[in-house]
Image (cartoon, rainbow, N blue to C red):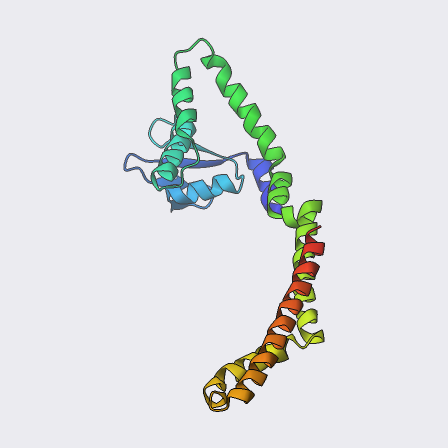
Length: 207
């Protein structure tokens, strides 16, 4: 709160730029970097940059340099087509209208930025379709777990594995082998039935 009052009373922070490209914050009496100035911009701190020797306002040039540095560091935000169109406006009869148009467009975007971010980040939680997808996914997991617990499916797997491991021993007795093979057929059919039941429940969730 005290910070806001200071900004209102003293106006924008004055940043002096010297011939050696160093930036001096007159409010904190300290030298700062261009990156720090970029952070001040993101924090909506009001400032102007003046040439330390001539006193000319060079805020526009410095802010433009920040954008160039950000784009050069791989943080591309300006599409190539936009840059081409923007460049083509220089010298155009509409050039004088572009600053106010771009400023109004950006102001409008900033006013709705918070709502936009919430809509994107909370899409699954706030969108009815997203909520349904989350709910269906949870129900699907619960259905599968409950179906496995409530059915002998796990036992069927274990029995099938056990029968597979004992195939070599059972081969010594042809009659016993045929009997065990018949049991395996029954258990495999039971396994298929259990899987079909689970698939049916999954299909009902998708509907």
